[in-house]
Length: 408
Image 1 (cartoon, rainbow, N blue to C red):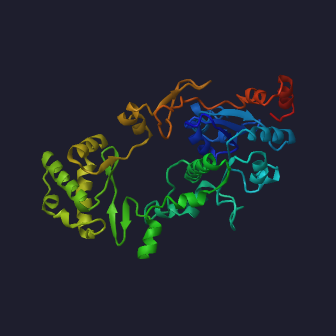
Image 2: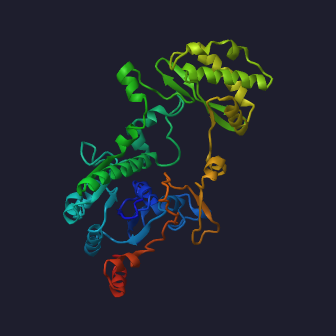
Image 3: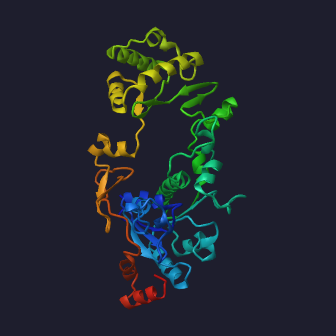
């Protein structure tokens, strides 16, 4: 789909996911990394628990479908070669500190003079302007300042990050990929490149769903509720423990909610445990967010007892039969074995050099008929340096001299 386009990827772990999206759509992504390797290669876990830049599973997962060019852009010769690459590129992604590339003569204003059609995507913690534009951030401080940390965790315990992955940078990178494609649409129409200025803080803030609107409309601050979701003055339980993990079950109210509760009543009868509370409540009269808290509390206790002695798979299959809004909470092992992504070929086996077994990686974010890109393993450090520099017109002797000088 994007086979005709070239991407220069100057990001580190803070933006590596952005170019991955375009790579999976077929773009030729050239990962420019220092001769010692990109810092992302130092992020674990590592295959076989052996720390090594070629065994980072983080790198292997995020750097698929791209080529590696080692180049020291702090060196004058390295900058010259990068500018030559940029002259024929369509996108450039970078996640350096604000002002760093400008100090090297590689900023937006510098490179658009070389290539007016370039889409230059800058991924930073807080954006390129504003009072915090030069402030550093970690994933923890970023999600805290983005607002999501305030709403996750138990109410009587400290806040909890969302998952183990670096959400601050991942959400920012996904936003960057979307912004790049919007700018690309403009370029196709006008021929004009653009600067895409991505603030990871703003990207996180956009994931907060109903929280800002809850304040604007009702002056209610949505707080962390653990397994519950706050809806105005009431709380609705979402997550329940079961015999081998957790399930998510949600009562939305309205006709859909009434139908769901009728299914739950039938499910209880089928199991030989008819429930007087579910059978005797007129669920039709409750709309979204209007169910009395006392009714929700009784429903919570009823469902908790029903789910606690049953396994995730059993509950998922029963929910389908009875049209109940319930889903198992999947861990990595569950996802790997789930029949739906398996049937669609989502998990893609990729052989990796020096790794004892073939590894399975997530497939592309989208599948476009007639434009599927075969999965290719992440590159080794500088694996494609000679190939790329030859395409720029350098001779083998010149390439070897660059290596000897620590430039490539």
